[in-house]
Length: 491
Image (cartoon, rainbow, N blue to C red; front, side, top):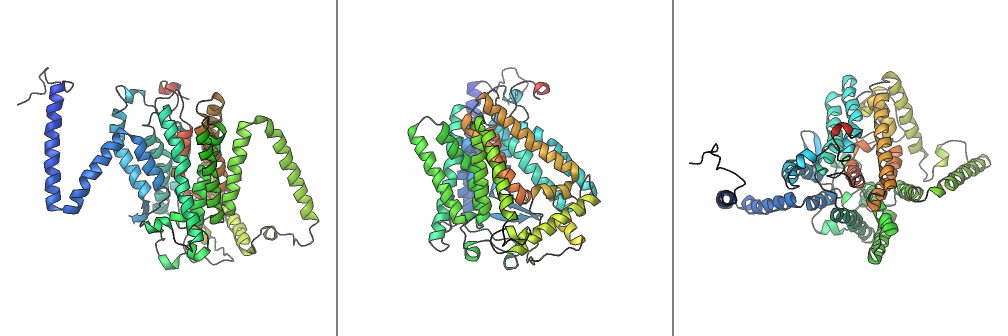
């Protein structure tokens, strides 16, 4: 019998480790064999899953690839009233494997580890959404949204912090974030020109259908005529392409290899093609924001001329409106598309936001509770919504209603600190491709947040992934972490 108190009992002893490995392998092999005999299908899947876990533990980048790809395949199931998908499952797996991944980083990995910068920046907002529970008009519903915020802004950066941002990983991440979106863009193009048939559908990836099915609006090709690839809805495809488009642009600008420049140009054109078949006006505005942010970051001399051009264009536009005989003087009359009632509905929603804010100025009514507050105000819309999802069509305004002035300020602070750090990393020349692409993605997010309630979507998993990769400090020991200093000196 082995006495663990015996000084000769040392796990660092090579022979002892070999004996332990053989013993554990024998026990595991016997358990898997028994499982296959008693329960064939799970039994055959278990070794494959075990092998994948071993690979993911030794090479986290492959789990990162699976996670990033899953963001474009939103297979969704509801568990306990909370909508979960493949990305959520992979994030849970990542968290389970986190200690083993850290152990692979060598001796002292846990001592070198620091809290990711993104977690520090989002901490005030997490506190604000928790405080909003005090005045929540639907505590259970808002608490589910709070859990989502913690998953997106805290758990994901913590999980990603296990990765060492060396040159090999930076190259892998840059290529992954540039190439994978092209697959789904091509799928959308194929869908558009083949009457709704998709390549992803042909291999068994079904379009996600909201719970309630027929009673809810589905923005799929058969309804809208707009390509959505595996997302189903065109908006999801457009956002995914725009949020990753900056990696193609950054590679084209800063990669020294000719073949990679050509590949980057090809990927950019494919992404534009995907946007075209998605027919997303918001997507093209977001793409413009990406290009605009990258140009201003790369060439500071253009900032003043572009600002002057913008102000001149605004003045000319206002002058044109003042002399446009066909304009009826209303905001709805300015929006193309022949749906003035939709514009008027947004104005109604925004007015209700201010009413809710005036009633609960500091803490709001609870994250995600604007819908209930809207109906409590007995407001009505021109377009009768046949599904229960109603929001303020603006992340900033809805946060004002849901979490009050404290929550909105904390969220804007997060965006400001993140932008500041990205620009600081860019100026020091840490990793120009990934950092520049992250700046473009953040610019697109800021634009999308103006016209949509993004806290109802999983776009934040993509955003935090891109930001974590882009904020990797060359002086940090792991991904997305502040400089490798004692924690008290990090800020």
